[in-house]
Length: 383
Figure 1 (tube, rainbow, N blue to C red):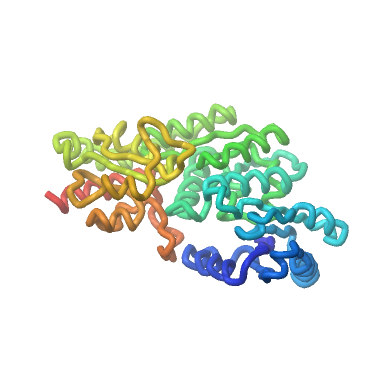
Figure 2: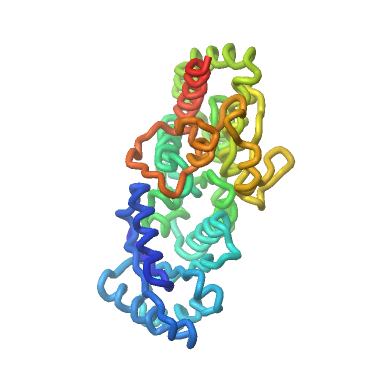
């Protein structure tokens, strides 16, 4: 909130972006604009439309920051948008102009998210006193992640119960420019995706804020995550709250362990998508519930490893079919190809609508209960 996003690009692309935000129930945040560009702008490298648009947005709407993003064409022909913004700074009434240069074909969306988080944390936060009572930032809650709002809600619930802490900034799915400017007041940064680590390192360098990286999946996994936070903060966990959460899931966990162990083929788990999500869910399923690992892959070539390789669409298409045994968790296209239902979806599809921001999470204690109940019921449906 409080920002304006201006695209310097061809007519129509920002319209698709607005529609996509509507599908994810986040269309009421930043104001979206597009300059459009003509063949003459491209041929001559003209930027007058961009300069006029920035001036008009600032005059009319008075945003606290203007984000400029290029489409593929300005990126490919090398228009220097940063130079344009530098020249306009004296006319912008001290309103920050930030250029996000990830519009070309040489940058995938993982790198684009990393660039965006770096840009925000490098240029917007200012000096701030450490808050009392203590607060924290969540870094990496982004709309490309499935259940991103429900997962952030579970994290805030757990931190409130365990440490009596409230969030300052949920970057970027639930925040404002004012909150980003005050990020230095946080006692700790919680990085829930790999792309957020460089941004957390910038905040650590600027303000001395420690950070913890990881997505808390499962009961044991969540407790270990909380212990790491407690160590960084030198705080004591509320054991009464944690023990209550553990007790609530005790019966279901016991049933799952009994059910999955003897059914090796049925209780194997294949999973593909975001590497943080894949590794986290896999750890919970195999280490806590005794499932066996099936086919696992990531959608990010930069994070491929021997145990979780990178698969293109052609590669997963060769392996995933209706004969695959055990559980399959992936995006809706892959589940449909394998003849599975969407209850096991863990990746957001481009055309998926999500109206329920209070959906059951996959992270934390309630996420562990949600996942294990999904798996338990799936076994029973297919007996």
